[in-house]
Picture 1 (tube, rainbow, N blue to C red):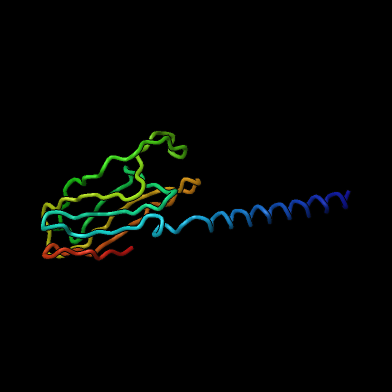
Picture 2: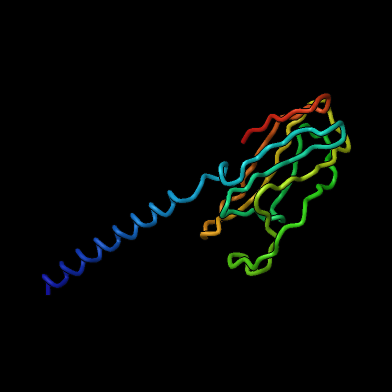
Length: 153
């Protein structure tokens, strides 16, 4: 009985090591979120900002997960103009969700602002292979006195 138990535990240990290695290898196959969802922002004029996400092949962003904030508090943002996406049934959320692929250009009206401000955009996306990323925040320091394209994560 002891021999059988030792063989069983040894086999179980080998299988569990193989599973752990497979999970580690699979995790290495996914892009970091900053590469899967490349962020840019720039001012177009004194009243509008353009936010761009370049979404890698095999990845998508959720429309309903976009959120926009600005600092200082004196900056007032208008309603973002987000292009239509594609609807798909999402197993994780159990409903149809609008998603975006490729290049996503969002226009964001600025209702009032100081000369310079920080725009923070919250987004969330998934890989087609099944990994959903945690929501991420991307920020850019923008100036309304001149067009700017500074962006940071």
